[in-house]
Amino acid sequence: MIGAAALVALGRFNLAPVASRYASYVLGRPLTIAAMHVQWGTVVTVKLRDLALANLPGGSQPYMISITRLDGQITPFSLAAWMLGRRPLVVRHLTIDGARLLLEHTPNQHPNWRFHDSKPVVSQNPRSDFPTLLDARLHDAEVDLRGAGGHTIRIRLDTAGIAAQAADQPVTLDATGAYNGTPVTLAASLHSYVELHEASKPFGTVLHLASADTKLDFAGTMTDPINVDGAVGQLTLTAPNLDRLLAIAGDNGRAALPVTLTGALTRQGDLWTLSHVQGTLTAHPFQFDFTLREGTHRAPDAMTIDADFPVLDLTPLGTGGPPSATSMRVDDQPGNLIDAHVIAKQFVFGTVRADDVDLKLNVAPGSATIQHLGLHLIGGAAQVTVAVKNTQSSAAAQFDAMLAGADTGQLARWFGIGAMPLSGAFDAHASMRLTGNTLQEAAPASSGTVVLSMRSGTIQRKIVEAVSSDLRLLFGKAEGTARIVCALGVLQLQDGVGRLAPLRLRTADGTVAAAGTIDLRREAMDLTVASEAGSTSLFALDVPLHVSGSIRGPHVSPALGTAAAAIHAAPDLHAMPVALQQVVRADPCLTGGR
Image (tube, rainbow, N blue to C red; front, side, top):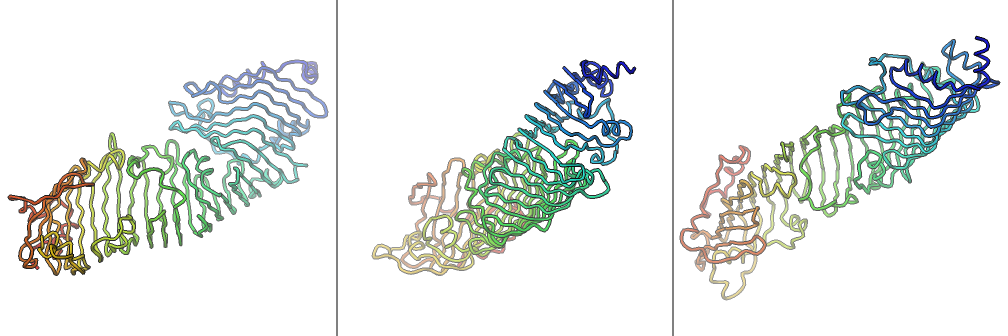
C-alpha cells in the first residue's frame, strides 16, 4: 500500500482508466478521460486531458460534458480536510480550456443532469461547498440550455476568471463572451469566500454586465449566489436602444428606443420582482412594476407589467412594414405569458396622437386579448376590445369599438385627406369578425357591422344641391353651408361584402340617402344616391344617381327604373349585436321626414 501511494505521489502513472471506471460507476453513465496525472508535493498538481461524460440516450448530442484540458493546484491540507471533513477545497490555480456543457430534457422528458434516474433532493445551499478559487481561468467554454420546446439558450465564454488574495479577502470575477450570439462582458465584485461559505447570511454582490453601450448593474445581496436566488438589491439599466436586450432574449426585432431605469430587484425561488422602477423611455420619464414567475417544466414564464407613462412615444419603432401584412396568429407555445396594464397620459406614434390611454392586455398560448383599451382620439373618447384566437390553419379575431364625439376635421388631418365638405362631431360603433393569417388576408373575409352617426354639424350646401340636381347650380355655385340635423350610416359586412342600408343625411336644406353594396374583395361599389323629394327646394329635380365600379375611380350615372327604391332599404337589425341595434333604433335619422 505504501509503495502504491508512493508511485501515485511520483505521478508516473496515468490514473485515467481507474478514474474513468470509478466515475462511470458512480454516475451510472459512461465517462472517459484520455489522461490524468496527480503530482504530490507542497501542492497537489492535477493534470487532466480530454474528459467526456455521455449524454442520456436520445439526447440531442452525444456528450453532456466535455473538457479538453484541465490543470489545477490544490493545497494538501485543504484536500485532506475536504475528504475527511467535507470542507471546501482551496484551489490555488486552475485553468480549464475547451469546456462544453449541455443541459436538456431528452424526448422522454428525463433531465440529463440527473443520474441513476435519481429524483431531485433538497440539499444544503451549494455555496457552502463551493471551492475557494484563489486564481482560476476558463478559456473557450460553451453552455447550452435546451428547453423542452427545443429552444436553446447558448452562453459562450471566450475567457472568464475568478480571483482573491486569500479566503477572507474580496473576490473579483470577470468574463467575456456572448449570450444567444450577442457579445456580453461581465465584471463582479463579491464578498469573501469565508462569507460565501456562511450560507445563513446574505452574500454581498456587485455585478456589471455590458453589451456594447448597453449596461446593466446590480448591487445587493443573494442567499444563493450560485443560482442567483434570494437576490435583494438595486438594478440599473442604461440602453441607447432595446435592440441588444431583444437580441439577448433571442428576438431579432428592432426597437430603437433609448431607455434607462432603476428599481428594486428581488428573487425568491421562481418569482422575480422588479418594483418601484423609475426610468426614461425616449427621454420621457415613466414608472412601472414587473414580476416574472418562471414556468415549471414545459410551461412558459408568466409576466405581469404595470406601467405608467406621462408620454409614451413609440415613433422610433417605425412602421415595420404595412399594417395589412401584420400576422394575426399568436404563438401556440410562447416563452412568456403576459398580463399587462399600461397607462399613458399621452401616446405618440408618428402622426398618431392619443390622450388618456388605458390598456389591459393578456397574451396566452394561441390567443391574445385586449381586455380594455380606453383613449381620447381625434377629439373623441374611444373604447376598444379585441380577442384573437388561433384556428387550425389561421386565426380569428373579434373586434368591438366605440368612438364618441370625434371631430371630422381632426379625422381628415389624421388621414391626410385635406379639407372635408362637412364638419362637426360624429360617433362610430363597430363589431367585426375577421379570419385569416394576416390583416390583408382577413379583410376580404370580414363580417360585422359598422355604424356612423352625427347629431349636429354643417355640410357645404353645394353637396346637397348637387345630389338633388338643383337647377340653381346652372346659374352659379351654391354658397355657404347647410345645418346637419342628423346623419346615419349602417354598413353590414358578410364575407367581405358590405350592404349599405341606410346612409341618410338630413339637413335644413334637404335629406340625402344612399344604399347599395361595397365589395372589399373586388374593391368595387354599387350604390344608389338620391335626395328625398319634398325635403329639398322647389328647384331640385331629385334625380337618383348610380355610383358603380372601382372604389378608387367610380362611374356616376342617372339611376333608372327601380334602382332608386334601394335608398329606402332598412337595416337588418337582427343580424347585428344588441348594443348596435340599440344605437341604430335610437337614431333620429333612421326614419324619413324633415
